[in-house]
Image (tube, rainbow, N blue to C red; front, side, top):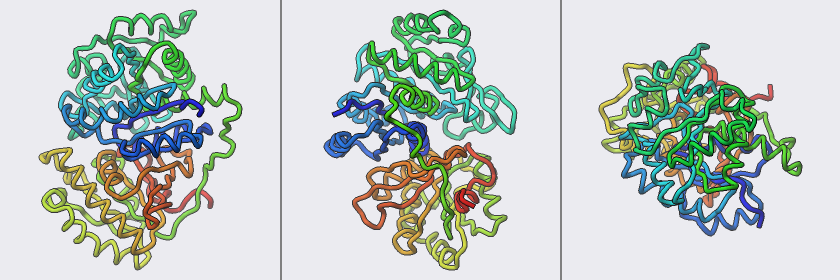
Length: 443
């Protein structure tokens, strides 16, 4: 059996799917699993020639103790799979805090699973407007670039508000591991910063790696791949690393080609959107969908928490009616900023909404034969996917418009197998995203 190139755990489902897509776009054979229960199934699939195995998770929304329970089995599986590169996939907006989604706890768990392992930290994803310079993280917002703690969506995030954009200082609140950095100026050294990275990691802590353009992403991918050949390494990284590694491996393995990667898709007659996102970008996308004639149905978060099954049944009447009449439908927890609920427990709320969305999605597929469903919002999408009844997904279409990839569910349930899903992070894409997901790219 050929050795697996990469294995990753993704801290939410939308980010996991995007990470998978970045490997897939370079011709790598990839699959994203929804749990770690199928150890034998995963091993058998690998024997059939996968290059990348992903495990989609929910850790971003969890407390440190719950993260331990969620991530330890995934890390044990990743160790058993023994890939060339290990990755804990994070959001490129570095969503984390001491109480929710703690990346400090993740690094400590990695050290427990792989004693003495290296911990390169790489959130930069320039193609998505995420940049790291001198260990400080920046984002593109409305055409401007600002520090992460000046990004309104991140500074006021209901679960993981960002108050510090120097990632060393941010992580110092989450772990006692020593902070290091490999900066843009280090890449100008004769060895491209390799010794600086080695020295920083030899101190026993973690190292933030900079990047502000795609050439530097590829350079970091080379550094991480080289590091992984000399010692166990767990890269705490966003999808930029997957893109860089995919490019690197495509260059060095000519039998892997992106020529067969499908990058366009047809439209569908009806679209269902299930949105648990409170991001301004998603609110704009819902408004555009409404302006185009879609039915928008409000899911009251308190109702979902009180009785998810009842909330789903009450919503389904409107969903069935609109879809039967040929209209697009969006079920959304928020469409305006004043609807955002910050008082409810974040993980409990995401779980409840996930139950509602999974129930609605199944009904739309089984009863009405819906072909394509969009899930918006990382945390709620995570629980929706785990509840829906599928085992895994693959990328069917890599969409050049970021986070619009068409995924195909893999399920032992014939009613669900083959359902097309789009998993969209809350803070990505333009106002026409949902309209494009319905219309497709083939004219």
